[in-house]
Length: 383
Image (cartoon, rainbow, N blue to C red; front, side, top):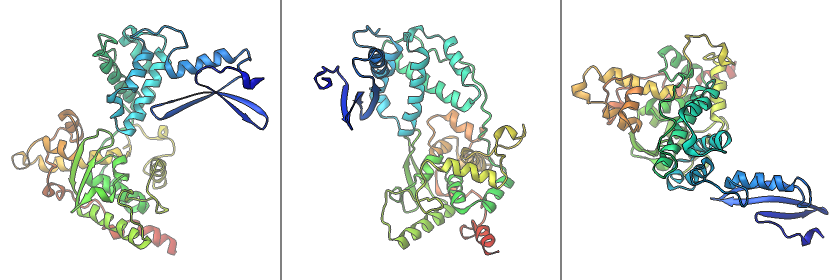
């Protein structure tokens, strides 16, 4: 009888509607892996079991695994404190790189991987430069972590020839900003304005909560870097926040940890902002439906470009008097950058100040008063 079968480790049997089902099931670090298996007496059972075991543990039962194996490097890195302390979004991106390493090099040892092998993987992703660069950065971080733990003597990701991303993070021209602010839908424009006036990344902006704001100061731990940043908020941002607070009071919602900015249905933004942002850019004519239809030298509007705009506008203002406003450390304080190089990248190599309230007030009025945002929607609806 099937119920008398002695099942191997990690194999579960389920009975439903008179039929037997077998699964390979493992829970590691709170994450479940569940793979369907044939009946243990079927010819394909052994290969299916071994494949599931290798996917989870890097080996099949009884197989020797080198202490320098890529599969072991990947597994131990995922079990490390370094990995566990990555912000959630960064951990997800790191997983993509780890899966790529396992897929391409899973049969090899870490010290067998050379720059030529990394370059080949990088080139296979080159049609998506931003993705290729991120994967390379994550793979490099993994090899650096493994280098001090005996996996390899060198990091093979060093000196890899990168391609320039077509997705520019250049600052927004004034006329493009005016088009976005005057024609964009209100719930989209409010997110853009908060990003523009604070210089923060999209995930942090749409995740801004009531309990992070006190006396006009926004204190956050950035999702990408984990850096703590304290930001005095511009009057336009404070007006947007007050509007969201008023909507909550009217709805009798008390949730300090719930993100303030909401979508068209009055719900906090989740994973859907990116799609809504792209759709809105297309609707108001800031980009075509297909990016390949964009003219070669045309401005490419990106949300991250609002962060660049923030740094650039203040850079151009304070650079006129560096003795008064200080140096590049001000940009690092405002944007939460770890390195001076990155701060200079966003500030277009200008000496700027971003630390205090007076600096925030240097930003000009990019568009209409908060009460005017999205007014065209009501005007069009009244016609």
